[in-house]
Length: 470
Image (cartoon, rainbow, N blue to C red; front, side, top):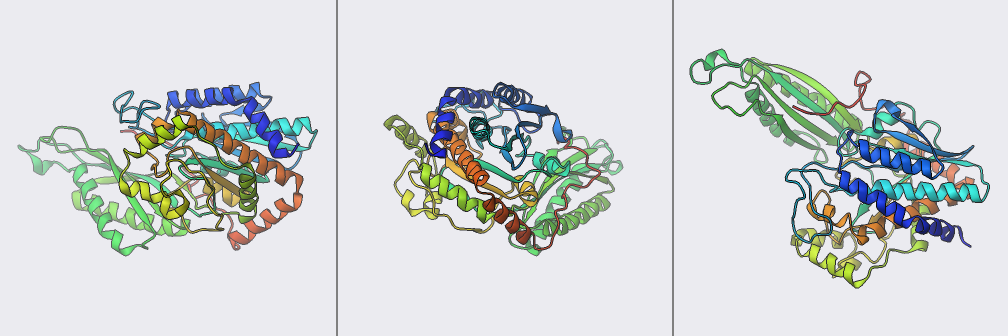
């Protein structure tokens, strides 16, 4: 029996257990660094499947590593399990229907991501044991991908230093092997302090922290014209100083995401934004505290591993859907804008008129820069890394939406999740059986770095991520 068939059989035998894990994490819907129930469930499942689990790694309560085997190569499978705020939604619904107003939801499918990675780790673990092979498989439980860059902290703590290669995936509306870089990102809070006063009787005695936030934001918006066009800057006022207009706001905070293709470019923009913040404080007679929260590096695509992953994806094919699943996808697509529907078709013309992806995108090595950020980037600087995208949502469905939350608890998503596990497991075993592939992948990583050593973009004084609360 072909190794792909063996691995697929292992995952299919665990189908109901894995779907149950995914659905429970969907129910928990815990946000970054607060994924206590999700992490506990994944740890217990790993232990049940014969892994030794180390909890609280990297100085993060919800980070963990499940290990099985001995010797080389050491294979890392990356799992995420954090949800997003404000995206509560009933599962399997074709219209907007929050379970809890303002509640959390898995709008990026990380309940699937973490469980699909678990499926791959379990399949590789069983294959190693059944074939009496040397090698180590590790499941990395990586919290806080949406905020806080959990993997970046884990990389800084040396948790990937003895890994030979890493594999991961992401739920998507298409099937593909991802061969793109990403934007580096800094997450920084600017906390202004002033002096409260009666806004009518004695405004001259007050110093408004909210004025400082507003002036800073205006200054940054003027800065946009004078930074490289590939850079992106976003902000959210996380503390407006209260709800009483007749009180001069003593405290106000704004949280910034600063992104650019390279860490060095992000650093330059960050320093300019810090100058603007200091200027806003000077103009308003306030003080500003600059609180660096987290950061992530850009991805270094590894074409060697990606080609192996693509070949295995082609061999395994894509998920197949029944009429009920197609009808559900059609109903979801009716809620999308025309621009959303066209997005995937612009990438792959074969998806024209389709409700669910039925093909795998052609593999295009090092295909540009993703206009977003992932802390997988930091892992890719340390070890050769490859990741695939597997259809878990209808064609054109944008991430971070109620539609993704709704679909994430359906058989469409479950099929994509289990298929991702098969693709990653098959990739891992092919590399394990062919050491020359790994040597080539490692040589490519050295070439990709172009003489530059990885430097963690999070300053050493930032020991752990601090939740950005008011």
